[in-house]
Length: 372
Image 1 (tube, rainbow, N blue to C red):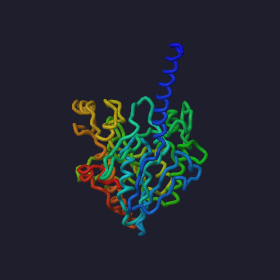
Image 2 (cartoon, rainbow, N blue to C red):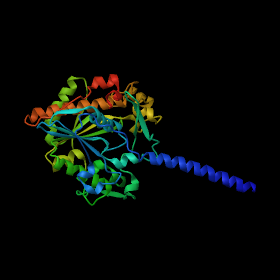
Image 3 (tube, helix red, strand yellow):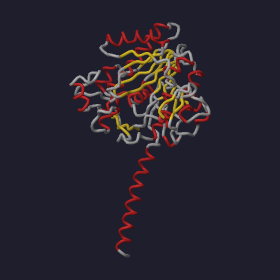
Image 4 (cartoon, one colour):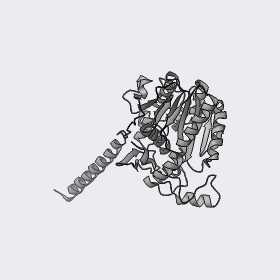
C-alpha cells in the first residue's frame, strides 16, 4: 500500500473514532436524569397528560404530585424552565425526593423544558453535566441550554413574534419557554410546552405557582422575587419574614407590557398567584473565568470576587462564591415563605409542605443529604 493511502486510512480511522466519541456524548444528553420519587409522591403523570401532542417527544416530562389527601390549596413548582439554571431544577428534585404534603397538594415539574436538557448552548463552553454526592452514590444531572433544543424547531426566525401579543423579540427567543406563555396547541415545540402548563394549571385548579430561575450576578434582577400585582401583598409579607432571617430578596413587579412571561401570563389568564424567583449563578455571567462543573456546583469565581471588591456588583460576593447548595436553599426558603404568606391572605386555602430542608440545614449538610 502506498504511503499516501496509509496516511488517508489513518485519518479516516481518527475521524471515525472522534465521530464515535462525539456521538456518544451527543446521545448521553438524551438519556433522562435519574429522579427518585420520595414517599411524599402519591402520583406521577407526564406533561402530555395535559396536552397529548407532547407524547413521545423530548419535550414531554414527568409531573410529580404530592397529595396530602386533605382539602386545601394546590401549589405548582416548576424547575428547568431554563435548563442552564440548575438551582431551579435541583430545588424541584429535592422537593420531589424529600418533601411531603400535610395539607393541600404540591405539584412539581423538575424539568419542564425537557427539550432544553438534551443540548447545551453553543459557544459557551458549558459542561454537559454536574454531579452531587448523595448519601449512597454520586448523582449526575445534565446541564442544559437556556431554551429548547434548536433541532426540534430549526431554523430560528430573524424576529420572534410572541403569540398572541405580536410583541417582537430576538429570533432565538422563539425557543425560550419563559417568553412563550400562554402557548398554543398548533405552535412551536416551546409554545406547546407552555400550552400544556396552562392546561395543567386549569385542570388541576392550581392556586399558587412558582417558576424557579437563576441569572448572572451582574443582572439587576437577582436574588429576587418577581410577582404579578395580584400577589404583591403576600410577596411583601414573605419578604418581611425572609429579611427577619437575614435573607435579602428584592421585590420586583411583573411588567404588564412584557408578554410571554410566566408571572405575567399565568396571572392574567388564570386565578393563580404566580411568582418567579431568581438566584445568582456565576456560570451564566459574562465576567466569569474558567467554565466547568466546579463553577456550577461550588460557584467560586475569582473574576466576580474582584468585581465585588471594586464595587461593581449589587450583591455580596466573597471567596465562598455562590454554591449550588446556597442557591437551592434560597429557593426552598423562598417557596416556604411565600406559601406561608399566601395562607395568611387566603386562610381558607391551606397548603402545608413538610420535610423541606431549612436554609441553614442545606448549607451545612449539602444537597445530597436530601436526595432519595
